[in-house]
Image 1 (cartoon, helix red, strand yellow):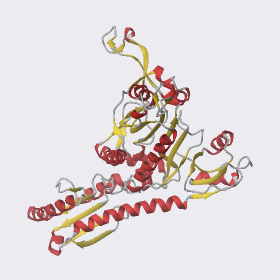
Image 2: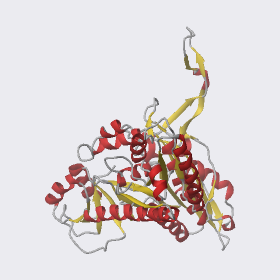
Image 3: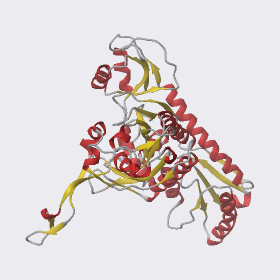
Image 4: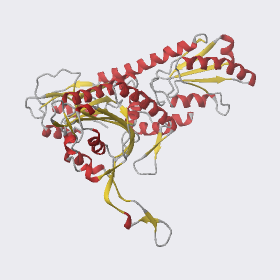
Length: 493
């Protein structure tokens, strides 16, 4: 493992290659033999489970309930909302038959032409259509609203260029779908869920994000407004890390979801949808990790503390085992997840490199001499600093250290992001500086023509109209026209 670790490409040499190698070597995920799909390995899935668990709690605190809807969607459903089908048409995987049969030579199988479906089915790229077709059976009166549903599932979007976690044809996510009696209630829900995402990103992932609203060109297909959180990776690129959509009455009208309001008048329901995916795993990796491997925030690390014993004799190991058992019990009482690695088939150096690669936040090392001296060696993964401390009260020390690590990696990411946000009013200067990455605050005239020109000439996109920066009057750096907004522009994943 130590030899493999040395082979991890440096971020400064090739950031993309570093990322791809790290995902595989840290045993998070690997490519599947199915084109564009990935295998999420147990360690990677354990991180996703923690993400899922914490988000699920936050959703339910707002009144959301989990449900499940079909994987397959009749093709006619997608065509009911024109903008929606146009947005996803090129990414749809289509099921046309329901049976195979052996071929004439009996050395393989072929599609049975007699088993052609009367209506083709789409493997869900997103579930607005199938869910709103269901909601029409649930909604008759304003008393049936709001409906606040979420589902954890997989989706399929046929990607041409894939990268583990960041962009795969099949990925895991959650998608929330809510129905409301009023526009105001739906808009408030969409904004609330964006805040849930932002709070989670910062408090659990230790990833600072910028909240804002997308331009019309960048909106979700079928939305009136798309709200986003944008994070900066260590190469200066943006990663859209969560979106929440105000869908207006588009899906209510498309699927005839109507209700009698308090005035006994027929009205279409108002809609939102919102989601995050396993792309958050990519955000975790690229925001915090270093040339030695993963750096995981303690709030999401599957193993927060690993304890490695150093011994020469079975008697020494037995004494260490006895001491460590109390430490483990006390740490678990404090809510700390801990692993004791006394496997004699692996050398200590191998273990150190392995847990460093996998981003375990805290490592404790205890040897026979430590027992005699009443000490333990502590290493924190974020800074790689080692310190020898008293073994008495080590549990409280570690608990506090984990919170310090969580705060430190957030501050490091925040400082990096803030140092790479630039105000720019000169287009020629912008075209040069954008090559090195970063977030650029620029005035925009609000036209899709200007937006398209920026994208074509620089490969950068308008990420959002950000909430955290003041909207000041100015002139569009491209067209020279008066600006409607001050926007955040960046190259993105």
